[in-house]
Image 1: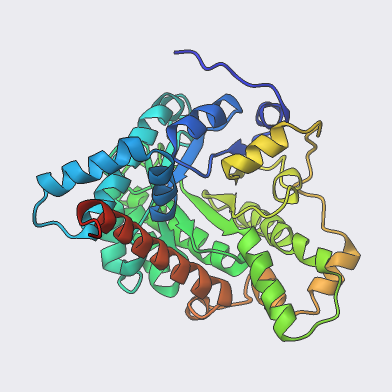
Image 2: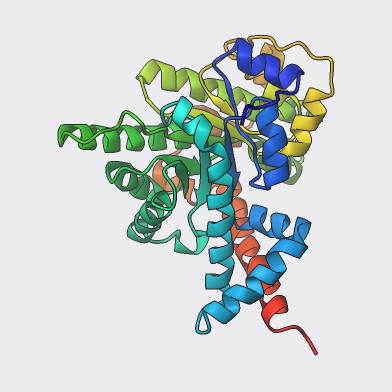
Length: 358
């Protein structure tokens, strides 16, 4: 079926620049509309699955009951993750024509490894391989932690297209981008195909902004709050430059939107921008004309203020943190804990369906 495209800034940008648009949701209705905006990818995880179930209770609550009957010995978590798998496969099917057209580079559905496996690189790599085999166009999220770096290289070597997640800084992007490169090189050395793999490295710009605001409040810094709206943008621009300079084959992916700068300032480059659907609607309803800004530096005065903060410097400089320091970085800890809480929320939702309170 031919796609009926919706005119607007999103579609204009996708046709003007190599910058790809992905949808930060696996809801079929939102994804269909996003594809009409020019989107060529999407994502799912327990938090998104939880939201999608609540949006489509008439579909998914009966399915949870069916799964409980089909899997009488399964835990709440196993049932919940089965729903995540089914939801992901459904969304992946919608993207298959794009996947085939783009020869694996786009048209992918992101699935996230279980954050409760974050302490074991082998468990992460094994689950990534399992998820990758659910559909030809699945891309798998693995966190940018010290353990995750090992899992990312191993999963890539096994042929998994990886989407690095829980990543907020240039050093995390560089370390994981290089891990992907090592995995690709190992495959090539053994004569294995890498031509249809489409790895990306996420930088969650808005979550970095959030963390720096918390740090500034703790340190009682006297600074224009608008400065922090540029922190994630500055790091994304720097990460993109580093990937080009180092010849890394993975693309930078922009996620965790907090403002329109995280779309408008990043157009023009060979990277992926993945706004939530609500942000896509806002952008597309505007009269903004997309401009190539990826190589435009952030204002010197803004950068001067940001560089006064050691926590921003850690995130901005390619060698600002070691992989071991990724694990204790505030944004990493907060986000991993949030993903674990989303797993718990999904467990509770399943429990309320299969064992409703009397």
